[in-house]
Image 1: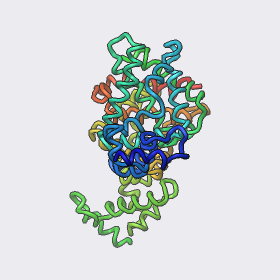
Image 2 (image 1 turned 45 degrees about the vertical axis):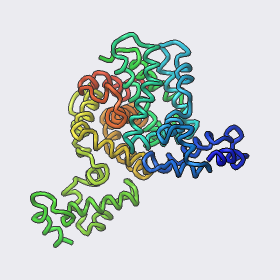
Image 3 (image 1 turned 30 degrees about the vertical axis):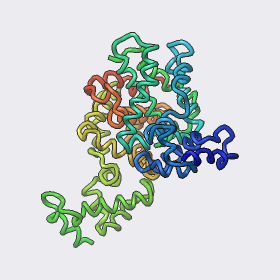
Image 4 (image 1 turned 90 degrees about the vertical axis):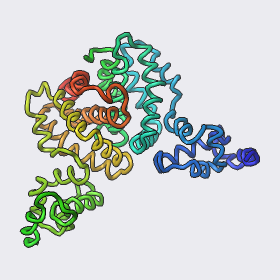
Length: 205
Length: 205
């Protein structure tokens, strides 16, 4: 196995200049295989084979399929700390606006593929849904709530924000309802920012 | 064919004995034909022919193509015409409120299972996504828009409404974010109705 590891970088050389290591190869392979098969049917073996590395490397680098999924699928395409910092960089009164713009810009960059893969896993596997829930609540919504909120409804506010963000992605990338499927980002920002702003700081009860 | 039709009612009495009656045959045929052709291109005639029954049986048992699709493919626990009629029964200013209440009441009745199954097929099959899009736009959102709207943004409004309705279902039943996953319906109505009302009749541009 250690022999295998030592050999791997040479095999993949030339493909991704910044990603010539085993870990990066596994993340790329995981994104592909999870997108193709969903969480349930994607196996560690299949992902490792796609990456051209030994399956034991999945445990070594990610602690297993769950960890690889969280890193490769859930955590992409942004670091939560950076995302939250970006969202909080500006007046709280315009946080709703920044949220719509940030999510659409991030997801549009992958043609919606990252979002679609995420939803496919979440709808087909309870464990993926749990991971999504834990991950987003812990790393994004709760941090935002802590930064913004002073009332006792911040958990409820966070889940309301989630409805609008997830629903936006579902309609734009998965169901592709016209015209929202193709509308420019600022049109969507104008229409939806007031909703997020109210969920974050306005009257909800 | 008329012989077949004439015999059917007696056969079906009670429950559905299996795959031997007209109604069951139509559901099976509908699943095939909708999957092959999509919602728009699948005709009542083609489905009835596949089932080996008279086309009038579609109206008789399902009220038309939309009802058959709702039952056979979407497995919706409501007839779209009834849903729309119920939503429109009351002042337009309270339509957002009725929408949240109606969808949650309907979906809660199945423990969210119907919604989860729908999202699972939509996220995993492009064909299902296309059918859902065509079906909901045609039978629910556009009918509501026609009844409500007078401005030139009704398609955009309909897609905005869809974001909030789909997102609500995703968070409550699929991701199960607390506390929205378990909150009582009226709490959700109070929080979310203003969003839907604005998308339907308020300023969005």
